[in-house]
Length: 265
Image (cartoon, rainbow, N blue to C red; front, top):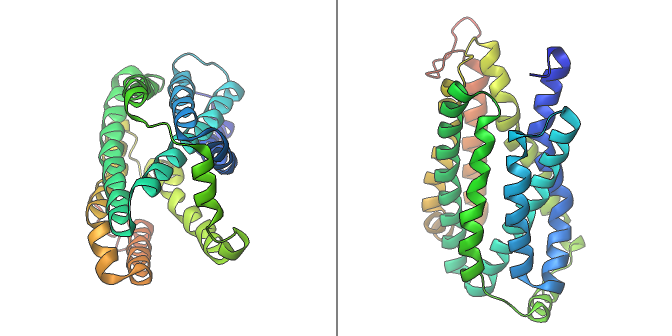
C-alpha cells in the first residue's frame, strides 16, 4: 500500500511499534496499578486497545498508523499487567503456574483464530479489513466492567514492596531481552520470508503463522503441570530448545509444508 522499499520498512515498523509501546507502557502500567488499582488501568487499557487497534480501518498515512500501533502497545501492557497482577493476588504458587499456563492457552487459541480470520478477511476485503477484529475489545470491556474487582492500591503496593528490587533481578531481565528479540522475529519476519519463497496469499500466510499459536496454546495447557514436575530451569531449557529447533527448520525450508530444501542443506 505504501509502495517500494519504504513500504516494506513501514510494514515492519507497523509490526514493531506495539512492542515499543509495551516496552514503555509496562513500567508505567505497574506504577499506575500500585497507585490507582487494577480496575481503572485494565478498563482504560481495554478501551484504548479497541480504539487504537481498529484505527487501521480509517487512519490514512503511515505516521498516523504507526502512532495508533504505539498506543495499542501501551494498551496491551496495561491490561496484560493488570491480568498478571490479579493472578498473583489471588493464587498461590501452584495455582499461579496453572493460571499462567491457561492464560497462554487462551492467548494461543485467540491468536490462531485471529490470524486465520484476518487472513481470510484480508483475502477478500483488503489489508484494512482485519483491523476490525480489534473491536472485540468492546464486549470484553463490557465483561470487565462487571468482573474485574476493585483492589486496594495500597495493598498491592505493600505486596510489591516485599519483592526483591529490580536491580537484584537484572540477570533475568538481561536474559529476557535476547529471548524476546528471537521470539518476535517470528511475527516480524515470517511474512517477508514467505513472500521471498513465493507464498503471496494472505490466507496461506495466516495458516503458517498460526501454527506457532497452536503450539503456544498446547504448551500453555501443560505449563503448570510441567513446571511443577520438571522445575523452572529445566522447563526454560526445554522450551528454548524447541524455539531453536523451530528457527533452524525455518532457516532451511522453502516449502510451506516445512520440507527442508535439500539444495540449501
